[in-house]
Amino acid sequence: PPPRHASPRSIRQEVSVALNRSTGSSGTRDHDSPDDKSKWECVRKGVCCICCESNIDSLLYRCGHMCTCSNCANDLHRSGRKCPMCQAPVVEVIRAYSIL
Ligand SMILES: [Zn+2]
Ligand SMILES: [Zn+2]
Image (cartoon, rainbow, N blue to C red):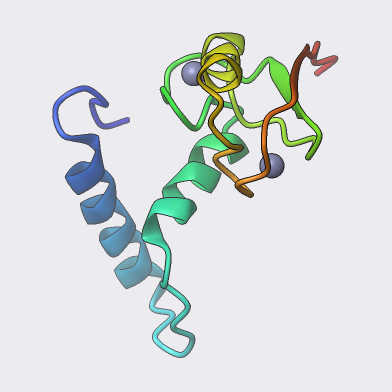
């Protein structure tokens, strides 16, 4: 995996461009939110979509999204920010335990 420290945004963009090229899907063009896409990439790998380092281990109430580690979730909650996936207010952070 590419290093995630330096300038993650541009690296990720290059990666996604390369991925798009290799799959050769030139038909559909729904890239209106590339940032959203990279969030989902992390979440799909089970990694926090905010810090992209820790494993996802918390659930955002009320939307129920599991997309952050407990650190970032508590950070969102404390600072009154919204769910990074759907922009719903984070009313509560629930610690989640994966059984996988
Ligand atoms: Zn995190
Ligand atoms: Zn959400």
